Image (cartoon, rainbow, N blue to C red; front, side, top):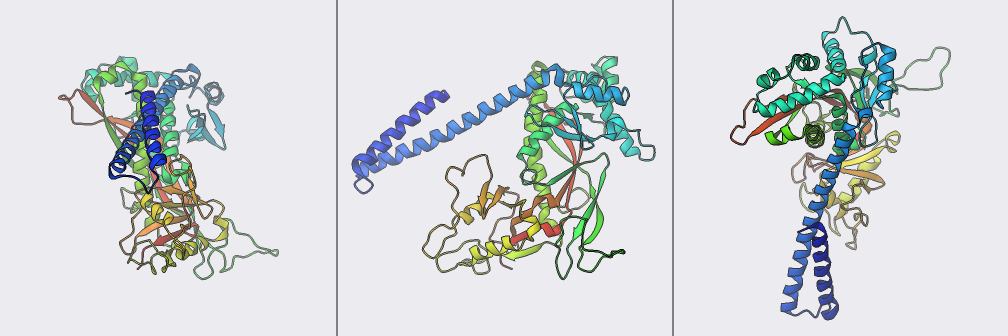
Length: 491
């Protein structure tokens, strides 16, 4: 059934249901008419779901087409001339729509937004002599910025289909020139870098989907495996009235710090590797190379956003994981369920006003310098419980705004936007951190724009598919604990 036909049927079913209600009224329905109305309502809900799914599919197809068109436009392909000296490189970037802003090289994307990819020195500066890791990053990035590399990469993808997913065999199927070009973008683990313009498409979409990034986490590009970042720690007795490493006061000729000042230092944000994988039909790979690049950008970004949110929310800071917000030490908590009618459950009734009061206490415990950019983070089920909190007359305190329940814009609570992630804890368990409230720029994401692709070692000969893995290099940590507050279950 076409989308138009489904819409027509939905209108017909809705009209029949409305006619029954108008004719019999809510209290005059016979058992037969009540059953008919229930059946009509059920069909309307099912059709609405099908229509929504079809719309989402159409939107994905349209987005795929936009990326294809964008990646095929000559002026937006990887610029010709990068690496031929600073003047030629800068000119090549400008011609291709790339820009240098605030010391960052930014790539154009099909969304109309520039995405900051590399520090300026990665393309313009000297190759580091005393840092082998950074030197490798500079060299492979410059190699991958060449048009010959992009062509060799797409030829490699096509060869994978013919070689049934064997990387070694696919590589031998390339010409000598293609092998040479592709080797320029080989990382230390043996994978091939995704071409920079395709990386930019993937990264800009990931930023639109990740709850932590959308909430305002600070993103810092780096060319190293460890990002050094300043850290602010509130004064243990008086708290902090500062929101960065700079403090100020009226001073004499010889100013001095006092015990009231926040403590400032630096800490390391290790850059770790995360991976997402997919299986593609070999026929699809062989027939539509540009579609593959677009598919990797769309599908890869969706899955990377989910993996990132999981790590940036609950990561334990061990060798293979960043430090998630809920794992960060030194963040103040507010008990949201101490006076709830059910132990550890975030709910209330007309005689238990505690949870709403506790939620207000949580919001107003945040220092004023962080309020302007503050947001909530909670799982959708917890937001539902927030919406069901009532006053003494059983009236909802914070119902969802009209028309916003399924909208693609953040809903609000107490004037701050709400972001949902099911990686946040649920209630019902003691000490669970069910709500984060604060200025999410107090969380730093270190991002190394060097996404690598490898092939799954298993072969899918029985299904004629090739498995492709995308590796991303990111890290994260709370650099200012004073910018967050936790809402927890009863201790």
